[in-house]
Image (cartoon, rainbow, N blue to C red; front, top):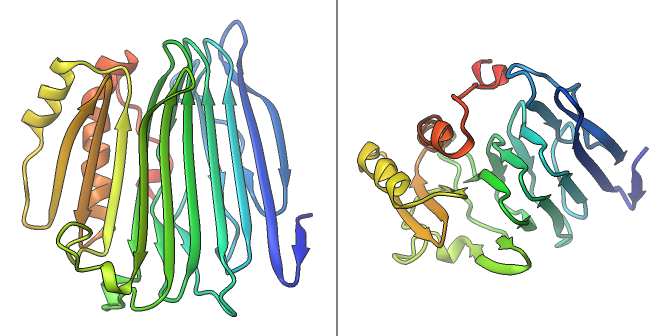
Length: 275
């Protein structure tokens, strides 16, 4: 069971991937509260596909969710989610907190490819994501945030959000992103420009040739805007749109494009994405 305090949940999930002679396996799984997983899948033989299950009903003010993922050397894993994470409005200004920490050891790879997070008006939330890479570790990771529900013309007209997205290699910071959002900043020309959906996609172990490939295969569209940059060996792609599926499709197409070069594997699309 989870830890409940005044109708709030404290939920924790700890995962550890290790390598056997034939495949990557989940060597440790520990969870408290409504954070858990489905059984691992092996559509690519040795690489472990894992579906992370978020709390049913979503996250409310006062909830605290913590996800910690560690990989051993020579292990290969892909984590996704079967559906969107929902963050509901807060009452009494209680803040919900979601912390995600990923440690990727030398000669291992991790692909973190979740569905979007839908943040309802009135939410008071703090999101922190940190990737710690060591040696030649590889990562491809995206996060997509949707403010309100654009499909029904619901905007994020109240609430306060804080985002932190970090990538470190060998304990040295490579990317440190901080973002604060309230209703007054949604239309800022140097911020979200009026777009309710935004996403970040990072790909490690890249070079100029891969950067040029990504840029040559991506084109501006009236439905979204994006930028592709490179920091050391990390490609960073940022995207703004009016619809979540447009950013998801955009990121997935790039992932399919770069996976053979970066991970030495053809794209094997998780079955859950087709449902």
